[in-house]
Image 1 (tube, rainbow, N blue to C red):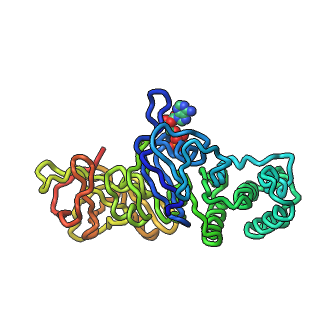
Image 2: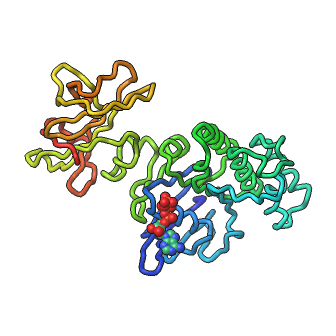
Image 3: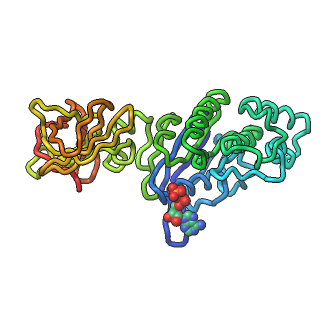
Amino acid sequence: MHALDIENVGKKYGEYQVLDQVNLQVAQGEFLVIVGPSGCGKSTLLRIIAGLDEHSAGHLRIDGRLMDGVPPAKRGIAMVFQSYALYPHLSVADNMSLALKQERVPREEIQRRVRAAAETLALEPLLTRRPAQLSGGQRQRVAIGRAIVRQPKLFLFDEPLSNLDAALRVNTRLELAQLHRTLGATIIYVTHDQVEAMTLANRIVVMEGGSVGQVGTPAQLYNEPANLFVAGFIGSPKMNFITEDAAAPLGAATVGVRPEHLRLTQERPRWSGTVQHVEYLGADCHIIVAIKDIGKLTVRTAGEAAPAVGDTVGVTPLPGKLLRFDAAGQRLPSSIASEVMPLRAHA
Ligand SMILES: Nc1ncnc2c1ncn2[C@@H]1O[C@H](COP(=O)(O)OP(=O)(O)OP(=O)(O)O)[C@@H](O)[C@H]1O
């Protein structure tokens, strides 16, 4: 039985179709991350799973039980928002226990669950503090603690780390991964952050314009994107796209190559061009090379010995690393990814 089963779910606001025929099954204990451009319907889908919004078509099941029309409190889910949504006048312990008190859980049981969650999240020394006396990361841990004590069937996270600074994000991300292992919980997690998606997910869902574009493991989406949209969305810096010459064989319209699959080389390079920009990041370097008749390509190299702006460099793709897409944007099987081609880069 699936922890969550979404069957042909649609959502309309008036005439505006926000979600269209969304189908998704989530296994027990799975960490599923939903990504997609702004406005593609990620939060709407999460709110529908939570019961905060009603879907206009299709069905939703949690643990096999039909949820259509079931109110949020009866779904066995807990949601953690970007904004934490803690009560400022309550202590950490009271924030964590409030929902359980409302559900009339016995006092000893509430204390036991709050203590256990506080231990898991290293919140024990903070239980008597108010939210204003906590850092952003600590507040987010309290919001997660408040979800844990409810022992939900399903955790929903809506960009929970986006209010944290870079260092805290990394820490809290590691804590979340650990928490998932400890609890064995089913988690559905919406984020804009590629690193969060790639590192936390068992599977990633890429949404596009209210529909599911592709579902797969992080490695599948990175190495075998189904189409141009997914290929361009997953990966930073972005995949390079090159338009094939009309004379190209086999009807491929676009060739994609990731920046780390291009090499700067002086010996018989595939292309020659001029370095336009160098982004030095310490461990690696992003070098943007302008190539006549091709356009701009981003090359990712190890940090040392980067060329200078204005240098002439040769660029060659690694063998077997080119992806080809047809005129409709669908990826062609790699068996026909011939590498002999004249190419132009996308604008
Ligand atoms: N209550 C509403 N009434 C009308 N349109 C809405 C409503 N809520 C959301 N929308 C629209 O539905 C679309 C999807 O919104 P949603 O918040 O789900 O997107 P998202 O993928 O989560 O975006 P973001 O990444 O920017 O948070 C958007 O175009 C939004 O303007």
